[in-house]
Length: 84
Image (cartoon, rainbow, N blue to C red; front, side, top):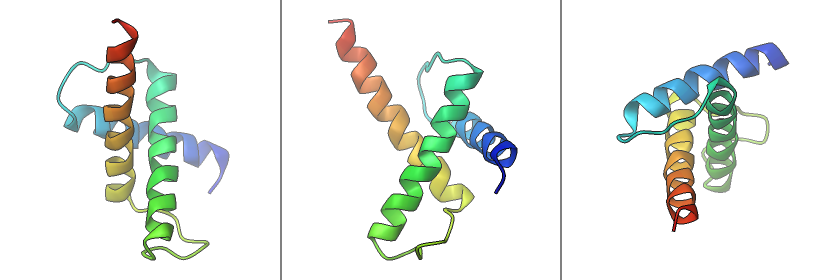
């Protein structure tokens, strides 16, 4: 996939993840896009580790959104501790 395609898919995945996860996750467009891209990479890594994906397989939409939600929860934990 091209860089532009990766950015667009990452943005869409990030938006879906932020819409599904409850709570206020204040972040801009760039962070939302990076969240989606990182979620797709996390889903691909975990899928390959569990034997669900081959070496050249991309993660699906649902797995990418789940990966982004996992990263949102981690982000919330880190952001919550920073204020203490």
